[in-house]
Amino acid sequence: MNVLVVEDEEPLRFLSRIILEDLGHRAVVADNGMTGMELIEKCHTTIDVVLTDFRMPRRNGLEVTRFVKLNYPRIRVVLMSGEKTVESVAKAAGADYFLYK
Image 1 (cartoon, rainbow, N blue to C red):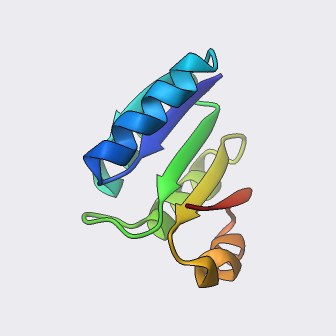
Image 2 (cartoon, rainbow, N blue to C red; image 1 turned 60 degrees about the vertical axis):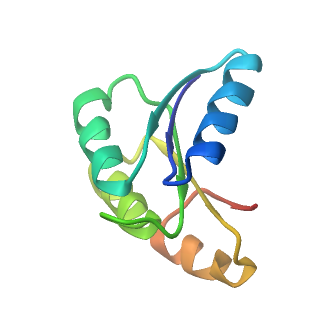
């Protein structure tokens, strides 16, 4: 499975990539929502899942989720946040899954 990790915190981005690769997945990373959306546009035929943080500079996770669901609905989106209260917002935006980190 090909996973795009969109996370602005470098340690979490690094750890996510390592865990995904150890599980046998291919992981590509982006350090903000804008870069993530650009990668999705370029590589949408090869991305299976987008794992995106909720709060980020240059486009947040909700914007990334809406972009994916509007333009590439076959791609699954996992929205993650340190705030449990965001779960209902994530589902309303079209996220397939919510991960409380």
